[in-house]
Image (cartoon, rainbow, N blue to C red; front, side, top):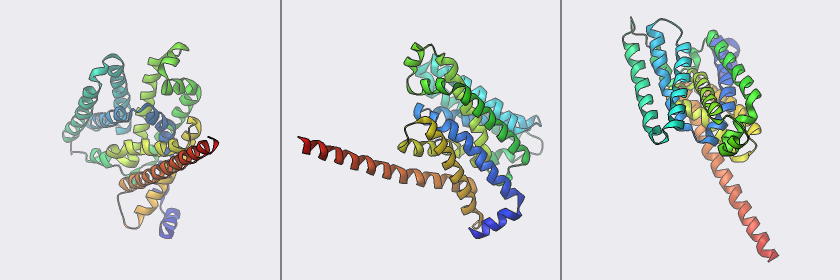
Length: 286
């Protein structure tokens, strides 16, 4: 750990990576609880893997893969969301098709890019150490966008997350806000790609939120805790992976996974103890 702290003061790329992890954590902390509560992790996975098509096309056309990823993610979110709303029975098939087609298109365009730009492959597993200052500005901008949208429409998102029928009765345009939520998921996916890659993006999007929601049942506070947990996992993963030169993305996810397993055991133990206490109290009253 001391070696990492010393290196952090000396190397700009480590400082940039640490900032990138914190910026990514803000996005996953804001949107992750909604993904967990709505149980749309599979939809988020379809959106994430469709992103590869936008990156491949962007590389082929010689423009920023980040822009291609953002366009592809939002397009996939709208398509998947519309299919779910209109043809609910075909949802799984459509998500699977977009998942596979997105990756296939990305690989084909990348393979036909002059000189074969291997950067596309790095997006599959991510490399937080390769984040540039330009990427940081993009990530900061997307975080600000997420904060603004969530600040403006928090109550509407809260309503559709827990009870869509009640939201309809209250006059909330459920379809619009559901599609907007999926677009925000798409933006968050793009935020996380550089940190942990497409393969692991859903884990970082959902695990901090899932841990927070095991102990906190107020969504606003759960979002804050998820942000802090995401920052902790990315920072600790970066520190742990530094000395042995491990891949940072998988290290981050392993930490988050272990923390989730531990938190699940603790929450179950607390619930069991509470139920025993309640049963004993009621028995004594009887």
